[in-house]
Image (cartoon, rainbow, N blue to C red; front, side, top):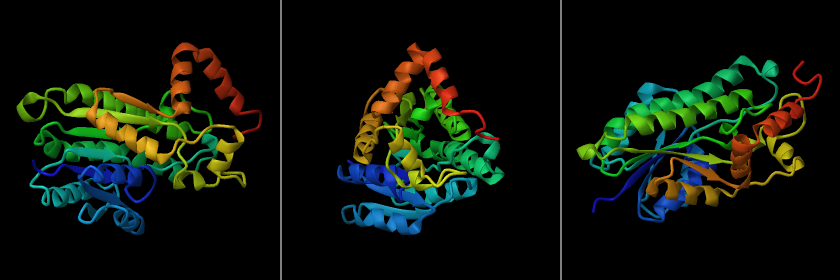
Length: 271
């Protein structure tokens, strides 16, 4: 059997790195893509010899997607079993305080980059039996989150894209067998994304999570969830206690969730 291949954006740290380790342990060839070349090299050093392939990639650049995937699949004889659309950025604070560059970066990386990746990868996924498009969404896609308005909106968009492509690609690919489309909705993960200082404060996003008493899900748990999602039949994979609780509350107790979200933004915040 030909060696299976996965292409991971955001492969230089966090979830991307953990997923790379998980799939490489199963003998897969792992394509690592990131703007952080040093991070990619660190990830590659954690994988078995010959398991990693590296390529700098800014997911906001549509032409760069074509070049990266063409180069990667040239080493796999055209095979692409999984595209893991994982690259993302985090930014919060009241919307009225967000700078334009923050808003544009969130939208461009977290959503536009995912759309570009899906479109660019389609031809390779369609030519590979049993292939899968896996997107990283977030627990913030269960209910619009106060203080994370744009971030939450981008993750809702990723969730919607996953559902739409699950329909569009159901009969695509080899012999019309379909391309699997899946997403992960993790809660808080202790990755470099949480190291960013919250605008208007001296606290990092991680400090806020800790103060709220919320749990962190280990990246290894997310990596196993990614493996299960690729090989299973679940469209949306909820990862971690926070994600499961928010999904339950948003469905069965929306009034309570709405009240809590309103309570997060007290008088004067955002002014």
